[in-house]
Image (tube, rainbow, N blue to C red; front, side, top):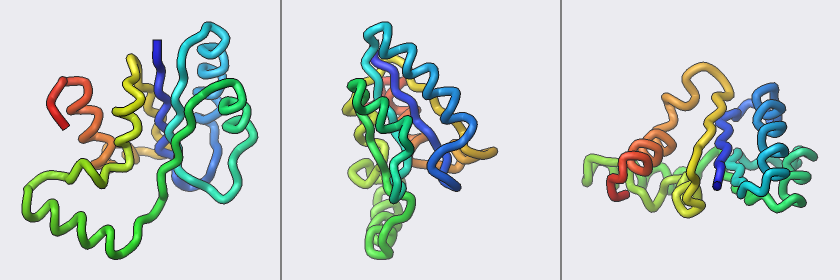
Length: 131
């Protein structure tokens, strides 16, 4: 079984919800589940994230901010197509990982609801709608 942990915490590299999913991920690794962790990129990697990597977890870090050029191109693409361009979606690797279960931890109220890229991938992936 493959389990993906997606953290939407963007105010710091580690928090209370990370402690909880970390414990779950450790237990899942002991039971030979394949683990993917999807977090924001920080200058310093939290030690527990490094421990999961050393135990075989796939770690994907997405950028917290994007260049002005990329944001302009995305806005134009959305304006033309009327939908979010998948090739710019920071959660593409979540789809590539092909999890059986996705655990999303909200870093703060409404982070997940306001993350159009994550919502798009989750809605399409679990409903089987082509991305």
